[in-house]
Length: 216
Image 1: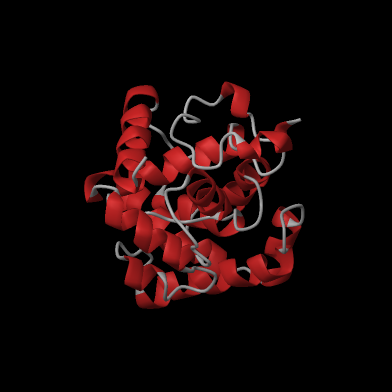
Image 2 (image 1 turned 45 degrees about the vertical axis):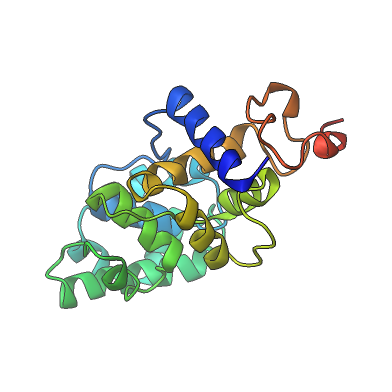
C-alpha cells in the first residue's frame, strides 16, 4: 500500500464514520476555549472540564483574570498538571489580551503565539475551532497515531508531523483531521494496549498486525 493509498483510505473512513468531530473541551467563548486549551497541555480534557466551571465563573473575562494573581488562580486549577506555571501564564495571558488586543482573543496563529503559555499547538487549536483557520494541531495523540498508522514516517517532532500531515491531507480538512486523530488516539489507538480488534482502520495501518502484541 502506498502512502497516498493509506491517506485516501483513512480520510474516506473518517469522513463516513466521523464527519463532524468536535473538541471535548467545554467552553462558551473564545476566551474560555483559550484558557481550556492552555490548561489541557499534558493534562486530560476530562480533568480540565472539571476545574473550568468555577474558574470561568470567577474570571468571566480577560479583565477579571488580569486583575487577579497567580496564587488566586492556582486554587482553582491545582488539580491539573503544572498548576503553578499555568496559573502564571493565565494571568499574564489575560493581561496581554487587555493591553495589546483590546480584551479580544486574536484570530491568527502568529498573534496567538505571542500570548504567554500559548505554543504552536495551542494556537492552532484555538484558531481552527474559533476562527475556522485551516490548522492541524499535533498533540501526543496525533503524533502517536500518525506514526503508528503510517501517515508519517520517521517524524521526530510535532512540527515534522504537522508538515507531513498537511502535505497529504486536503487543507479544508486540516482542522477536522486534528479531531479525528485525537479521538482515535484517545479511545481506540491508545498508547498502551491499543484496541486493534475494534479498529476499522487496521486495514490501512502500517503497524498492524505487529502491534497487536501490545493489546494482549
